[in-house]
Image 1 (cartoon, rainbow over the protein chains, first blue to last red):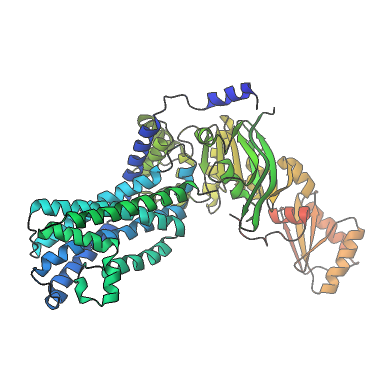
Image 2: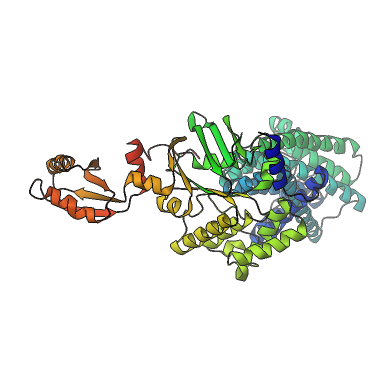
Length: 273
Length: 317
C-alpha cells in the first residue's frame, strides 16, 4: 500500500487523545466489572441462591449434623464457620465459569473482540465483579455465623482469615474463567464446575475433622487448596500459631492465580485463531 | 493501488477438517453496499468475522481502508462497526447502558458515549424504551439496539452479519431503511444475507459465495438478468409425464430442470411466460396437475449456478 493511502487511512481513525495502555486497561476493566455487577444485581435470584445455599449449610451443620460431629477442644460452630466461608466462595466460583461461558454463547464476546478495548479487561472485569460479589456473600455469612453463636477468638484474626478467603476466591475465579472459556456453554460449565467444587470442599476439613476420614482420603484432603485455606482460617480465627498455615494457603492461591490466570488470558487472546 | 474500502484477497480459513473459506477474494469500493449472499455454511459469517478482526484467517489477506485486519487489527477496530448474527447486547442492562458501555469500550470518551447513546436511541426509535432492561425488548428492538451499538463510534465501515434473520417484516424494512441511510451518509457497508430480495434491495454489488469460494458476482440487475425474473414449477401425475413434458419444453426452447419430482422453468418474461409454457405443453404432454409461479429464490439461483449439493454442507460458522 502507498504512503498516501496510509495517510488517508490514518486520518479516518479518530484523532482524539488516546489514553495510555494502562489507563485504558483500568477503565475497561472497571467498565466491564460495572456491567457484570449490574447484571448480577438485576438477577437477584442468582445472588439470593449464592447466599441461601451456604446459609442452609450453616443451619444443617450447626443444628442437624453438628451434634454428631466431635471436634476435640473446640466449639463446633467455631470450627464450622471457616469451612462455610471457604465453601461459599468455592461455590461462587462456579458462577464465574457459568457467567463467562454465557457471554461466550451470547456472542457478546465476539463483539468485544471487534472493539478497540483492552482485551484482557473482559477477564479482569469479571474477576473484579466476582471479587465484590464474594465480599458481599462472605459478609452475609459472617452475620449468619454470629447469629448462630460463632465467636472468633479475635477480631483481627477474623479479618485476616477473611482476607485469605478473598485472596483464594480471586484466584479461584481465574481458574473457573479458564474452565468457562473452554466449555462455551453455561450448562456444561455448571456440570463441570460442581463436581470439582464438591470434591475439593467435601474432602477438606471444611465440615468435619480430617481425622474422622479414612487414611487414604485424609492424604487427598490434606493436600488441596480448600483444605489449606480452611486450616489457615481456623488457625487465625481460633487463635494459636498460624504463620505456616497462612503461607501454605497463600502459596496455593498464588499458584492457582498464576497458572490459571495465564491459561485464561491465553485462551481468551487466542480465541478466533 | 485500488480504492477498495474493503478488500479480501485469497482468504482461507479451516475449522478442523472443514474448509470454511477456500480462497475468497472480493472488494467493496468506499461508500458502497456489498451484499455477501450464500446458503448456511457457505462461509459468510467466517468472512465477516475475519474482516472485523474477531477471527484470524489461515491464509490470504484482507484490508479495511488499506489497514491489514491481522497486522493492524488495533487500528481496524477503530474504523469498523460490527453487528453479528445474534443481537450481542446485554439483556440485563438498559438500552442506554448498553450503548454507553460499547461507546466507552470503543474509546469515544465517557461524555461522548452518553451523547451518542441518546442520539442513536432516538434515531432507531428506542427513545421510549431507552431505560428499560433489554431483556424486556422484542427481537426487533434488540436487533435495532445491536445495530445502534455498532454505530456509537461513527465507523466509516460497517459489517452486518445476517442483520434481518428472524425479524418480522416491518422490522426488516426498518432495518433496510437504516442501512440505506448509512450508505447515503457515506458509510461502506458489507452485509451478509441468505435472502436474494434483501441483497437486491440493498446491495450495489452482490458476491455470491458457496463452500468458501466466490460462485458469482455482479450488480443485482446483472445477476437477475442472468437468472431470470420468474420461476415456475410444474407438478405432474406420473414420472413418465414429467419426462414427456421436459422433452416438449426443451424442444420449445426452454431449459426445464428436474427438482424433487417437479419440473422447474426459468424465464425472463415475467408471469406472462406461464401462458406461453402451458401453450407449449398443450396437446403434446399431459396437463400439469399443479403450477406454482414465484420469483427466483436463492435456491434457484444457486441450483442454476452451481448445480446440486447446495444446502447439504455442514454449518461452518
